Amino acid sequence: MRKLDSFKVFQKTEKKEIIVNKVLIGYSRISSKQQESNYSIADQEKSLREYALQNNYEMREIIGGVSESAKGDFTRKEFKRLFDTIKQRKNRPYAIAVKFISRFSRNGGKAIGLVSQMIDDLNVHLLETSTGLCTDKPKDRNEIYRKLLEAEEENTQRLERTIPGMKSFLEAGNHLGVVPFGYIKYGKRVTHFSRMAEKQRIEITEQGRIFQLAWQWKLQGESHVAISKRLSDLGVDLSHKRLTALFRNPFYCGVLVHKFLKEPREGNWEPLVPMEVFWKVQALLAPQTLGTYQISNSNDARPLARHLICSQCDNLLTGYEVKKKRKHYYKCNVCRGVSLNAETCPKSPQKGINDTYRELLKSAELDSKYTEVFKHQLLKLFRYQNAEHEMALTEQKTKLGELVTNKNTLEKKYLFSSNISADIYERHSSQLEWEINATHQKIADLENKLSNHDIFIDKAMNVCENLSNYWVCGTSENKQRIQRMLFPEGLYIVPEKRTYLTQNMNQVFQLIPLFTGVSEGRKKKVAIAEDFSSLVAGSRIELPTLGL
Image (cartoon, rainbow, N blue to C red; front, side, top):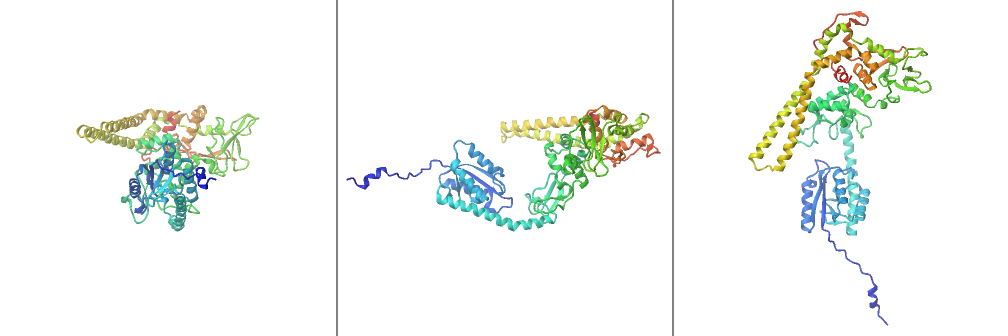
């Protein structure tokens, strides 16, 4: 009879896993620039490299090295890049190495799920170099999970201590975080030593002063592409795609809005624009968010939709069509019963709004016998307003001089010094050459604008003498451009009387009655203004007229 020992051949033995993969990818981060020194980037990376060297690991690379909050894992760019790097590589590392588990994540249960998925799906572990704990061992894995939960609890307690102070700070009108474009912040929690101050102070920069012009251009109906180009001419590079977000920021009118505040507050900084300008721009960006009226798609038969403003409720009129009758109307969606026929027809009891608007334009036209004297006045206004282009031209010429100097300096260093390689020289030289050519083109464009003022004046005079014809015969786009040119803020209409309130007319066209000798039914002398300081926002006419 066989002994029990003979059955050992059927007994399964536990095979010890031999780690062949000795590759690590490090991850480091700080939560803020003011992070304690023992959490500094340099200290973290030194610890990671020393651990790898002492334990015969290969530290392939260290990702991170920046200030990123642990509030959300995959909202961190470097954290996301860490996982993208691991997933894309065919030969994945053995583990992600961090000095402290809290540097990896402070999201508790979510972080535990993420680590478990990382182990199961990617076969990549998490290693803490300060303790040597690694998720490849069950006991260590539980300890790492406990530390992740502790990190979340620590973060929660820290927020409970700091949030009340942050709320008080905000309620006093101070600002948290990075200030928007055009401002610079001084205070205790700033990144640059030169801006350290005992009390927070926020000031407008030179670029911010130039950005102020963009708000006026927006009110004048210019597109974001055109605004971006004009800012670029003045040395401020802002993408047209970014302008909408900037225009929607209440910070620029001196208002503080934050999730920690129950109500918006007035901020302790100089507003870039007045509140009324801010809200006028909001109406242009998205008027449907500021009232109860509905948006109607543009239609050639209803060019005045979203241009006419109801005098009773200050809401824009929209348009609609009665398809059975094929008739178009303007309507106020707030005031009951305000519906105005757009076109005049035999059965209409009253004249169509399109025709009354054309008559308004006709009354604003310049009499040809006053052409020369008005042309003289307009030339003065053109020169006054194009001081902006003169400033832009000076900026571009200064920039060109700096670029040429930099290119000459680069060439000298390359020829007489061995510190610059041919590859570096070619790359920087090509970039400088491209910038020089682009600046030359901007200078040429600006000089062309300034030299062609006679052509511009002739076109402007032609428009002033034939406003109604241009509006009637123009495309839908050109009609709207003329409308914005005359009434940049919209035109008020009194619905029951079908009359217009023209106090918001472009000030250039308000001058025309002075030249025709008619102003509110009384004869007046023609006045030639020498000072144009009052004819600023809303009085530009060159851009709308050039496309006609």
